[in-house]
Image (cartoon, rainbow, N blue to C red; front, side):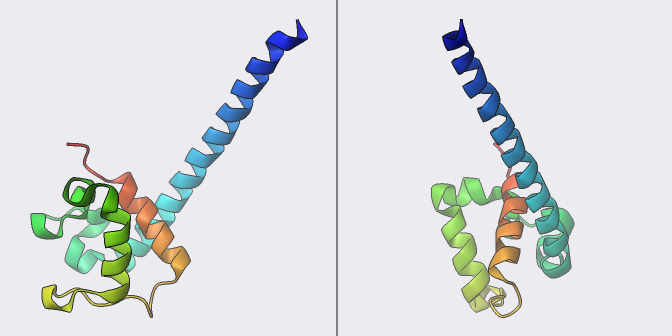
Length: 111
């Protein structure tokens, strides 16, 4: 009987750990939303809602697929001055970038 409890215990442990990870992601995303709306809204819209598709950050998955995180980091830290994007490496800490990334991941269009 005690061996039947092992899979249940493993399942419950994973459930709790995943729930904690999801809650942590939600907290990171909320903090990232606040930072985004402080630094990025003027070009990319409040909460990343903006009408110009060229700057619509809710479409990163569609545009860049699995490379989206690398493109995000390079663009934010190095800038794209030819497109009007400044470098933010002096203004945003690695933690702030992680939080902004969590927010952007949370708003990606699935289509």
